[in-house]
Amino acid sequence: MPDTFETRLQKYASLVVKVGMNVQPDQQVVLRAPVEAAELARQIAIAAYKAGAKYVHPFYNDEQLTLIRYQHAPRDSFDFFPQWYADALTGLAEEGAAILSIYATDPDLLKDQDPELISTAQKVAAKNMRTFSELLSKDHAPWTVISASVPAWANKVFAHLPEKERVPALWDAIFTICRVDEPDPVEAWRLHTEELAKRSAYMNEKQYVALKYTAPGTDLTVGLPENHIWTGGYGQTPDGVRFTANIPTEEIFTLPHKDRVDGVVRATLPLNLRGNLIENFWFRFENGKVVEAHAEKGEAILQKLLETDEGAMRLGEVALVAQSSPIAQTGILFYNTLYDENASCHLALGRAYRTSLKGGEDMSPEEFAAAGGNDSLIHVDFMMGSAEMDIDGVLPDGSTEPIFRQGEWAFEV
Figure 1 (cartoon, rainbow, N blue to C red):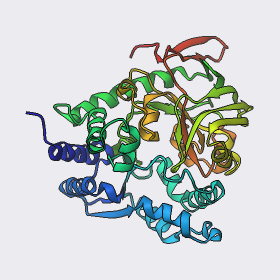
Figure 2 (cartoon, rainbow, N blue to C red):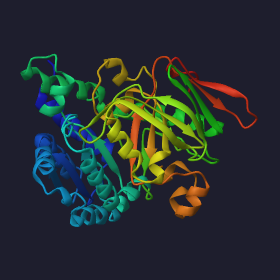
Figure 3 (cartoon, rainbow, N blue to C red):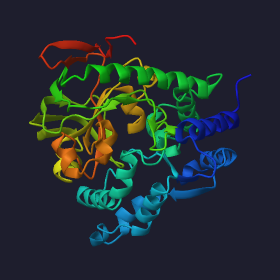
């Protein structure tokens, strides 16, 4: 007999606590969730306390209140950010609390709102949350991002189904993709993350100086800095606790050299940017910097994103994902970066992760930049992989080796 929804939800919660955050005895837990995901949040709290958590701090948000702000708040109030919120999260991260974010949003929430106000709010939030974001980018504390099926998101993804079937259909997809339905989900994740770690080890041994991407609409060379580190499957805190930052995850990733990106790249999936969809967009890079960007839909939002700061026009992450990943195989466009980025090779505009460069966590900002690392208030992934993409690794002598062919790994581990 198949498991009931309640049993599957409990298994999902247990997976998040054991594999995602890897909650330790006497550890605090931060739980950020939309109000619609309260049932999942409660199950995660139960699992966390069973694992020995000292205290679970709930931070709920309501997207409708976000929309109400854009509709009714004074136009000159969008440069305000609640400092207490940034201080609270930063303090908890500094203490080593496990940080969980349930990312489940309405892809169309802000589609009719003023791009200037959206840009202002995003920029001030990024600025105030910078210290917190940097702690996570250094893996100072275990952190995990997951999703939950909520009505607005399910209505977008499964619009073709009768309304009452949409939320359950999205839950089914989440449980399947996250391996919740495996006989032993925790063991399934151990095997999966070990395979990603092996691919990372292969790429780390190669130390390619650049990657060359070729696909319809894409002809791009991405330079890689000396001593870059590929990571996949799991991260590790300074005291040696492993955690999985994204559930699901199908990627291995590193940082590009911020000044050595040249060519054109075309996105293959839409980008959901805080309630705005950006569709059919592309960038042209010269010496690491975006010099041209266009989108069929959402171009104004895209331009505002690039104007956030100098680093927003450069890349901070390069990630490899095979088209045979479980998410890609569903054939579903999720309108959710956590899911869509794990269906496709992707790049990220903005801040690079310090852990992607040997010794990066201990470098000054100037040293990190000199080594090729990018800094920015933002870190925004966009998907550009496809079953038509080839990727070659460039060796120091200029010769090349295949890494991807037609969207699949070209080497075995």
